[in-house]
Image (tube, rainbow, N blue to C red):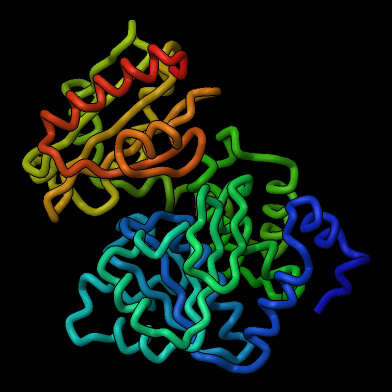
Length: 357
């Protein structure tokens, strides 16, 4: 374990209000081999997958038995990620591996989510294990009180960045190898728009530099993440922008929608609509964007993005039982598409009248 008080990591953690007692508690909790389950949220993205798999690899190297579980499938364009073939997908788990792993776990780590509710059907399984210690590692607002040890830093640009700093503080930079660094780098770029969003800072680039020191192939990673889509996805994107994008408030607010029938028409695969919500923000006047997509299970997924002072976290919490970050949030609607859009339009008008958009 590194000498914290003489290291830059010590200074960083003090600045982040992550006191050394938290790092010590984390290391003490895992001081001897344990059965560990690492879980992340429904509709997992690059940050959820990258941070979970990276931490799993580090803990395995310390002698722990670690399994990573996701509630449902992840995007096909992330299947190249190291160790992704070892992920247990609960929605496809026909023989109960997920339940067995969670029930036997001595430590349950939840990454990239602020509440057990983000695990949906897995929540009850975790709650049934009353002896396992629960650890939260996350960068979203309003963490729940369901955990024994909480690393919650909304100012962190990604959970992968937070995980990278916890790894280095606990086990040293030498704990990073090329595969682990690749996983963490994917998490960092997917949650920062390839280091383009407003949530970046100098510490993030210093952390990325540590990853590059392991020899990761940045151009290949970029191409795998951003240039590996299907023809169906490209045609779906064109359809959404041309036919489904609408604007409000003199072109300053945009929204788009997709029904299940429309998605099937373009051979939709999990992850195909990721990032669509960001595109309207490339239009000069647009300050806020929303994407509504029908999901199996009878609800509509709501994705929200914004520029500058427009707070979509508050908007999501107030109108769609969701949340997230200041400029990136999400929620759900259990109304039909027509009523959901009508609700959004009314909410935008109300938000605008309060001077919030």
